[in-house]
Image (cartoon, rainbow, N blue to C red; front, side, top):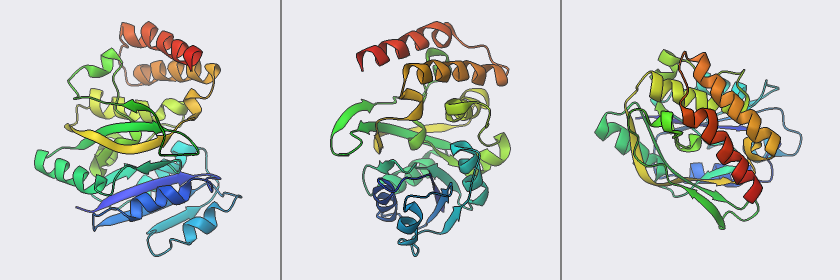
Length: 249
């Protein structure tokens, strides 16, 4: 199976090299690597071009935000499976793609996901927190469950069938897509109980109290736009948990 990995970036010169190296050092032989850059001004483009023999497609132009860039990358992808790794993140080990392909093939899954570690922004060896996803069960989204999006690998045909990222949901666009695919469309999904991705702390949706509240509003909108009724957890307990996490941060 051919695997397309997408990296979207804007002014990511301080981190993108490690991201790219974690992809080109994968032991899986058939990877199409696509980089979509938002016309960076900080030397990002030079770093990407230094890997020109490893990068299959490189686009650098203005976009309408991170999810517009992801949609561009999905449109360019020709692999059987698509994974998305942002410029601040990197794969934990060199066998991630091999493990993903093996699971999807043997389980005949439409998608799979794994665990993730939040690491220090400047020192990726320092683990701040671990996101252990656990096994998905039907209805898990109703209880606030979701897989970490950087570990979410999907057969390309699922994007063709169910659509790409919505651009009107802000930082909840990845949540809405997984809700649409997994909860609403009930695609067949598998779980790899191991850390696949290390994510540098400091994401947009978690960077301030205001952003956390806005993210929750967009989560609710994600349910409504799919004609779904959110659970009590999503309406009340999830925003309260976000407030608590911000206070104790």
